[in-house]
Length: 417
Image 1 (spheres, rainbow, N blue to C red):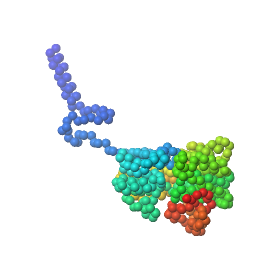
Image 2 (tube, rainbow, N blue to C red):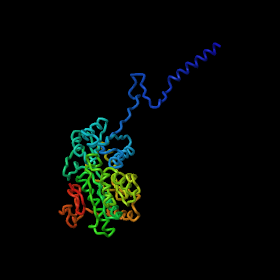
Image 3 (cartoon, one colour):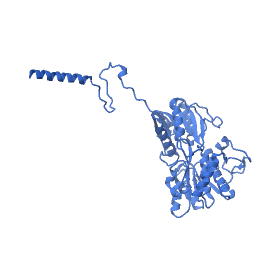
């Protein structure tokens, strides 16, 4: 028995020695402290690399089915395509939802949470973007729209950290106008406009040019017989008590013989009202704006949507900012004409709606092909709405003449100021 007891004790001691020498088992990510303050540095686990954070200021709700959602999903695209990148955002950045608070102040909050890049997504934020960039030279600031980084622009500032990016939505609006002209039975097209500025004038005018071209060149109609009316609501979306009600504006169009309404606002009232009138037996249609999925609000009346695809452009910017190689530039990005709906290459697309007829769809494809081949509708002779000359016969508009368009065009009805 004594020998067995000694043998048993030897086994116990031997087991304890083996246990002391065994490596520690991982604990599922729990943080553990070293038992010795004298442990060499090389034995410590390396610190996890922090994510590169970029922030967005969205003028409307992040899920507005329009302009702000297009930006938000563009940010999600960046996060999906770049490892170690994180997005934070503040939405409803506008005077109605956040009275007394400026976009620049909200950008400060994003930076306090780690943002190294801040994207101001609306033309309405232009002054705040400049103010913030001037006071934060170490933060990359991107303004979607604007001209502060455009050397040939009117408001060039030349800040090393402030860039501009926008899509040539003029093409998308021309496509919308063409689809409307190929569909209308009354020859009356309404345009539901936001506030009035250079951007909104040139986009409404682009829709008119596309409509006039397809109305006359494809259908053989007299351009003088096309009615194209713009009604502005006063902001990018409805602010009760401040703007005109876009629902009422759309209803007024449909009740007065306009059978297609093109939207220039951030939300989908044109589609939802067209759907309502269609259910009552009227043959009416709508073309929303900004967001690829906005036709889902009323597929049976939606002819299609010109939309922004911000992801690829933002990915390039975020990659450069993270690498420390970003150069402030002004970018006005055209569609990828090899495939305007390629989600990885084209900043501007046009998603056809279920209500677009086969004939109209074929006509629109023909029109897109002409644009891709170099068709330029900002070519003379063109006059402004007041009858004064804009472009002489054979004259092609410069980028500056289009970007800073001072009036609507002759043949359009609606206010220019």
